[in-house]
Structure formats: structure tokens, C-alpha cells
Image 1 (tube, one colour):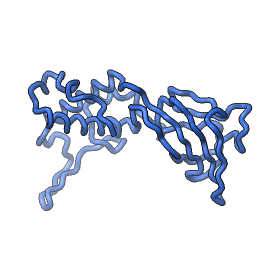
Image 2 (tube, rainbow, N blue to C red; image 1 turned 180 degrees about the vertical axis):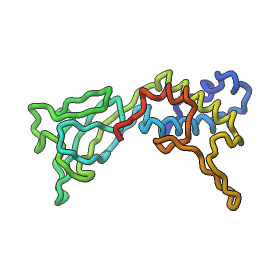
Image 3 (spheres, one colour; image 1 turned 90 degrees about the vertical axis):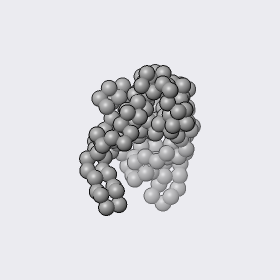
Image 4 (tube, rainbow, N blue to C red; image 1 turned 30 degrees about the vertical axis):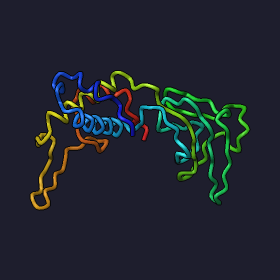
Length: 194
């Protein structure tokens, strides 16, 4: 996973000026990882090869990553293990929402996504060349939050003294609770279709 902001961008936050750059780099990586996990998606352009989906018998498949910049192919795996492949040109793509749908004139074996468990494999490119500014601001705020809460127990739900374990408060997505302003900034980018 790539960092979503630079150390210089994080250092623009008034509370973080003068912080050791190496420590700030660690916080940037941790904050980037938290934002990616919270949103359940990558932000920067990457290729996703043979990403598996469950076919549900419909004509629309929502991919995990978006915006889609290129669709290479869609493979359907039969119960006996045989695979049929359709090229990306045989699909209509809603780039911003990450949805694909067989074109009306497709030459695929299926013009829908047949029911099955992980029977659809999609290879595509998704993400943006640059991270949106509101996501960058959210990550900078997470960095500040991590720095100002370092060693604090404000997000700790329970402690276990033997073996020194801590259980953190989690949101419904299974990630540590993020500040409300961060959640608000990331809300439009959160993948809720999973």
C-alpha cells in the first residue's frame, strides 16, 4: 500500500510542525493504512488481477475498486473448473461507481453473472492518479490524531494486565474509531457494497 500523503503534506498541520520526519513518515503510513481499511478500497491507480466475486445471477457486477480506468477481462469459472473469458470491450462500464454490465451485443457465453461462489474473476485497472484533496486532509487529520493520542488510552475499550493486551473500540467496519471529521471527509469514498 502506498502512502496517501507525503510527510511534507502532514507537516503542514500546525500541531505536527517540527516533528521528526522519520516518526512522521511512520504515522503517515499508519494513517494511510487506516483510511484505506476504513474506506475498503485503494485510492491510487493499481491493476487488480483475477479479483474474485460471487456471481448472483444479475447483469450488473460492482467491483471493489473504483473509479475503473480499464477493464481487461472477465472470466466465468464453471463447476467443473472450465473457464470462459470475455474481453473488457464486451462490457459497459460505470467508471465512477465501479459497475460492469455485459453489453447488449456481447459475444460472451453469458450476458449475466451466473450464480456461484467466487466463480467470476475480473482483471481491471482502478484508482486515481492523485489522491483527492479531501482524502488527503482526512489522512493528515488521522496523523495528527495518532500523534496527539500516542500513549493515551482514549480509544481503548479494555485492558488485560497479564500479557499487556489492549482492545480498541471499533466501528462497524472493524477499524478503530476515527474522529467524526475524518469519517465525514472519507464518507463519499467509502465502499459500502462489500
